[in-house]
Length: 284
Ligand code: FAD
Image (cartoon, rainbow, N blue to C red; front, side):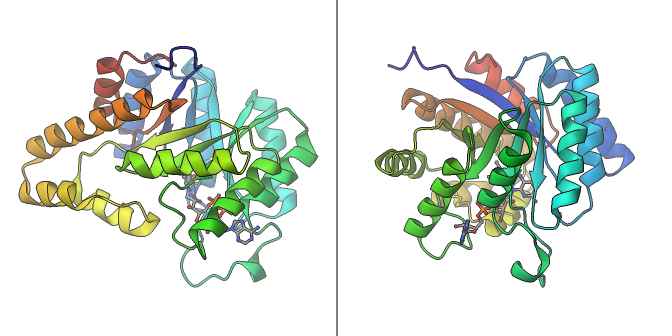
């Protein structure tokens, strides 16, 4: 139905914090760079814990993996001068794509009193002021709405602010209900937002971890999926098999419905992404 669409398939890593984590990340990069994704993005710890790790991981991808690298950059605990330095450093490294976010602070920190830039739209505007069109700027989108949004309508309007500020494309928070995505796209089109909005895909491999993440970020695990996953208990193999089935079907529905690509939250593990990628015969 949508063969003429230029689709983008990409993936995400997080910086390793331990020696074991380093090994998993290195193995994932080795296996996944072979797939030639359009880019690999690297998360950024807004609380400060992995900010250097983001730069180092991006540097390693640029130098060793032969694919484009996109650092996540957040404004919630970063002042303008620090942001300017980061942008310069990434430019010198040859980076041309960023994922621009507000980020999350550890609980207990207020937003207004700690920040020069309070929301992602202000960060996008700042990046454009400082660097013109050098960077392709990705922003976050929430088909099931951001947990702190005052209303669905306000969240859509706030998403549009980021686009109006100069975002080129968006990556969504993960979801397992394709209708939420298609409705979100529809609403965006009605508001005149036409940038590509690429679904973020979270493979299902560990139910307890997924349930914890989902509670925090406002992504819904539909009841029927939750119940089935719960019933597998510690049977990791069954969780993975069922999870793969669910996520493969979700990806197929999204692509059949015209999604402009997929962005995989790899969690620094190669296997689920590789299986989905190869089954669907994707190419970056
Ligand atoms: P914003 O777009 O600023 O929105 C945040 C909230 O404020 C929303 O409720 C919105 O409706 C509201 N809002 C926005 N603009 C305004 C305004 N002008 N006035 C009033 N209200 C407003 N977190 C990290 O810490 N590090 C990462 O690397 C990271 N990577 C991510 C990657 C993706 C693809 C996604 C989807 C999320 C990622 N996150 C990451 C999580 C993200 O930082 C959090 O969801 C954060 O709470 C919001 O960031 P944002 O950029 O979407 O914020």
